[in-house]
Structure formats: structure tokens, C-alpha cells
Image (cartoon, rainbow, N blue to C red):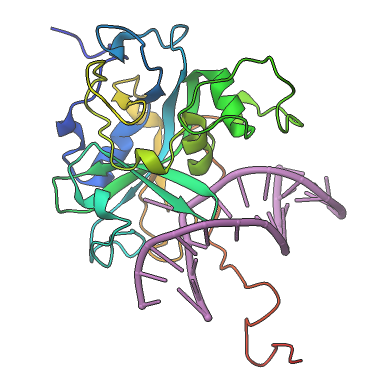
Length: 269
DNA sequence: CCTGAGATACACT
DNA sequence: GTGTATCTCAGGT
């Protein structure tokens, strides 16, 4: 019946049951919604994104990266097989794989292919299309993951030195996860099932909506960002000209601070 | 605009 | 012990 132009319709699981490098470009323009619990008794998917999303955030994806499975993609977390951390990537498609990195950041992926394959798409950047205030609060360090915005009654925000611009709210994978309130506890949740008010979920649900894909001619691809291996594989995809696409950063090997980088130069007491 | 460097916790070898 | 699918600030251009 529907013409497929409804931006509020959740994507089916079959959408993700494909190789990650095929899913990745198709995810551009789609909308990831998290939170907004109680968005409606009939299921949250038909909440008005422009105005009516209360207590949640929605991001239209503008940049993604595909990661392959064991033995085929040296840059993937699953390259050397299953571990406790990457277990979700070996699970069913359409679930969120959220991992912790650099000691302080979370990044969110969507799992591809059937159980056992271990591939996913990293969500690198997007445009916040609803819930700007809550996203900005989280990005300023003022709101816990998945939580709603506290009322502005008690006092000033912890550090409101500089207001984060709309453009930068979800520009970068860790910024996107923060803006959406995605963290450790959301690892493994299903992003294809519509939110069910009757279900007893540990936290607010996340759903990928059909959104508004860009003209095919606007999709660009190139090498992935920040990885030390497989630098040639052009599995980063973005919408050309979109201001929310993150700046490209080649990998820089981190040197250990001053000490112990090399035996010869190490200062000896 | 650009560059460099520090911060930080955890998974894996 | 080592390396990280990053971000933010400081400072120069």
C-alpha cells in the first residue's frame, strides 16, 4: 500500500540481511531514533519527528563505514573471530553493536548478515532532526545516557562554556552515539522492531526509520577513517556536500608519552 | 582554517 | 604490555 516515502516507517530486518558494504550506502539518509518513550500508545514509530518527539533524539545518517567478517577485513573487530566484546556482531542483523574505545567514547554499529557472520556498519555522522535540546545537553556533559532532560531549575549546566552548534551535534561516531544517548547498556538491542509499550525493555528502544535517502548521485565512497590496516578498502560512504559529514582523519599511531617508546631513547634513572 | 598532543579504560596478545 | 573504528583544547597561519 504505502509508497515507501513514509519517513517514519521502521526498516525491516531483511534490510540488514546483506553484506555490510551493500547495506552501508543504503543507510545514508535513514533516521535513527532513540528514546522518546511514551511517544504514543499505538507504538512510537508514528511520532512527528519535527516537533513531537519528546524525550528522544533522531539523527539522519550522513556518513557510515562498512566492516567485514572474520578473516576478510583486518580492520574489523571480528577479524580474529568471536570474543566477548564482539559477540553482538555475530548475532542477528539489525541489532546495535555499541563498543567503548579510547577510554572514554562509545561508537554505534548496525549488525549485518545472518547470525554467525560478524559484520556491521559503523554510524559515523548524521544530522540531528529532532531532540536538539537533549542532544546538546548530552554533548555538553549534562545528561546521562538515555535519560531525559532535567528541568532547568536547579542551577547552571556543569560546563556550558561553549554551545555546541547544530552541525556538530552528531558529527563523528562518538559524538553521534553521545547525542543519541547510546552507551554500554544499549549493546545488542534490536533496532528493527517497533517500540512496543507493552514490552518491558531495560531502556528506551532504538529504531531505524526509512528516512529520506539522498539522490544516488550524491553518494561518495572512499577509504575508512582512523584505522591502521586495510587503508585502501573504500568502505566509507557519505552524502556529498552535507555539512555534518566528519572531517577525514588518517590513522596516527599513538606514541606512549615520552617513556618506553624505544629502548635506546628511554631515559634511565 | 590548520596542526599537535593529552586524556582515558578496556580488550586482547 | 600494547594499541585503540576518538574528541577537545591550545596555538599558529
